[in-house]
Each structure stands twice: as structure tokens, then as C-alpha cells.
Length: 116
Image (cartoon, rainbow, N blue to C red; front, side):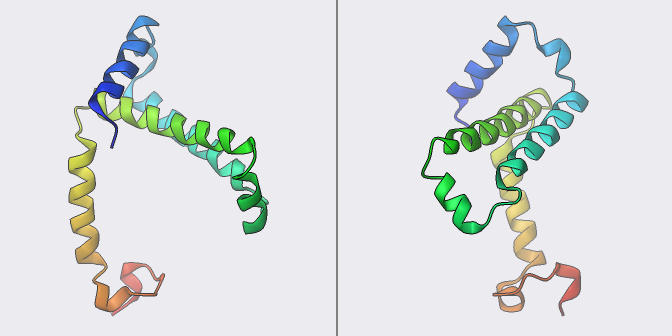
């Protein structure tokens, strides 16, 4: 997901500022949630047309910043817990393939427990 060189830059950035002391897994998880909520605010109360219009303006940068904040905190969390995000996404992809077989779910938005 994130290139190793970029992760190293992020980790160095944090180390240089002595912020690791504030970045326990709990605090990083909280920060991910807060930043995700800020990401939601970008979409709140907007129609699909308004969203499309905003994507063509300087407001797009605000959206990109919120996405980056979520990704940065998630990257720190995975780094600190020695979790390979690519590996766990691959594992989850396989699990989802079993939970949501194409022949049962194509075109449906039910939860996997709601279809037979």
C-alpha cells in the first residue's frame, strides 16, 4: 500500500519530532477514527453533484489531506505493531471471497448473514 521509502520518511519525521511518545497503538487508533470522521465531514450534507463539483475545485485538496491523515496514522500503527498491511489485506480479500461468493452476492448489498 505505502512504499517503504515513504514509510521510512514518515517514521523519521515522527522520530525527529519525538512524537513516538504520543503514538501508542491506542492513540493511533483514536487518531485514525478522528481523521476518518473529518473525512466524512467533507461528504456530509452534499449531493453527488455537489461532491463531483467540489472534486473539481481547490476543496479537493482538503479531501486529499484528510485521506492522507488517515493513511499516515494507519501506516504508523502498522509499523509500530509490525503488521504487513499488504499481507493482511490479501488475507482479508480471501476471507471476503469466501463470505461473499460471486454467484450469491452479485448486485446485492445484503450483509453476508442475510443471504442464503
